[in-house]
Image (cartoon, rainbow, N blue to C red; front, side, top):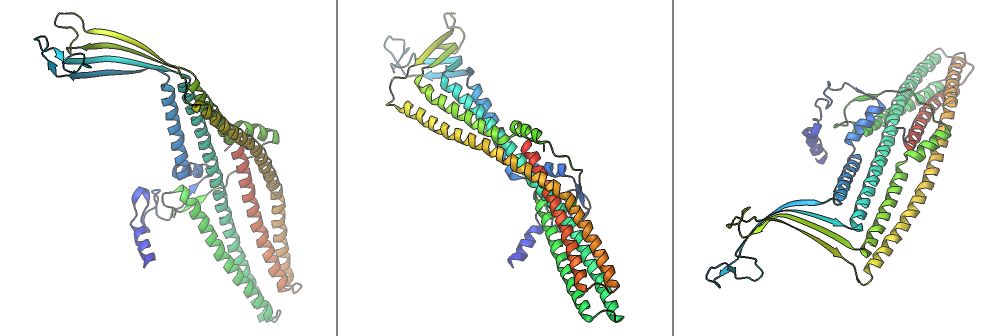
Length: 441
């Protein structure tokens, strides 16, 4: 009952491009028509659909706005202030113009002034530096998220391509097993082979059928897993295209690019800049803070430019306030010490990031080179296994080989082809990891 409810719910989902269970493709094409996807397009689509990458983008943009806000705090602010105040009067001089409250300047008081304020202090500068470093760290984390997504999409992309190739291998292997079963049956009919050969061929054909079923399942899972990142509806039919392999960079080029374009290192350096700004902000409490204020407008008993006696109500005023820290029970000293302690931890993290970068680059380079060197050997193994299978079947047809030899040759050929596909995926993923690490993808 629960499963039927879920299917019914899925059949009516149409929000944000999710089509019905048997509806038209969200890509706008005919139902069932595959969409051809390149690796670059897959990465672009994944960036638009991955929630983690969207969150990193939002955080980076927000940090950029915070940086602008912090730096604008170093500039003067201006407001146009307007106020009207009425206080109860008291008739002390038979004119009723004296206010009852001694704090009031008059019974009627109107203020309409342009007010400019500027605060000068090291603390404000430290906040701006901290916001600048936070924006740089957020940008580095966005790049880390982009590269991580790129690596994930690359692995899924080539994994799906390999699954499709393995499916083709399984289909061919099943066809060959059925052909061999037919051959053994004919030889048994001609009294050239024992019934045991037919039984062994049947077992081999059944095994190839099960392997084909598993290969279909693996290919479908790989298609759906990648489809989640590519389409509003992961059931959208699509195919991937093979692309020309770019050569590996030299070791010197990889070292230079990794040290220059590594976002983890940039993020660690930005975190160090944040810590330095925090230390500066804590030490700023030892220093005085200056506030400058300038006002121009009216502050009079009439809301007018001129008074009843035709004198001008316009005027200006300026003030400077200097706050000197004297004693805070050593709170500033403790805050400075706290910020310095945190900075030491960030220094340790920066050193660890540098060492991790060296190790990752060494691992990625070694993996890519080893995987590349094995590609030729895997191709040779496939050709050798194919030739061995051909010769073994010829020998069996002539009565010089046993059925076990043919089945073993078939298994060796299938294993060699699958190993070649695994080797290709390993190299593609290792190459993509190296390119991601050096900033070339």
